[in-house]
Image 1: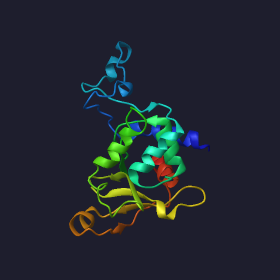
Image 2: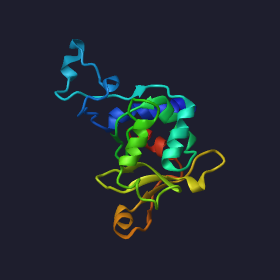
Image 3: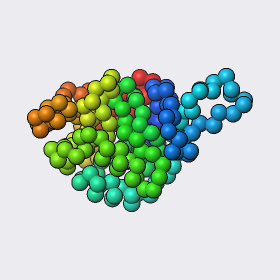
Image 4: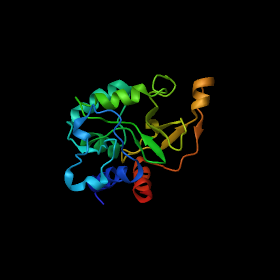
Length: 190
């Protein structure tokens, strides 16, 4: 399957796994239009959907500068350059938002606003892109120090308590050897 189709199936799984409620309307590009024709499916709270918004390849430079490293897995980079979304709960992890806006500033803000991004222990080896699902607060990171020739790397879950309380990085067992593996699991679980 092509990466484009894999990304599309991944993005399509968002609505199957998350309620997609739009709690703030800062992003009209993502609001689902609830027309009279489908009034039976209307929600009292508006819902959002990911938007296919193309972003120039050169904007990755600002992301790399903000996180102190790069590249990131090629499938993830293709995802952030092709789509915009709000934070989404995919059950196995909560994917940080990549909202509409100038360049990748929204994604950079999502990563920066996570309580772990300011921990110098993570950068530049571990790049958070999500937090663990099921109400856990552990950052889910790309271990870019182990980037393969195919431009993918292992995903690790970092124990947030050890990080915040003891300034230690303690990796937790995580089921994926790559972002591609994680994407495929999300698709099949939706």
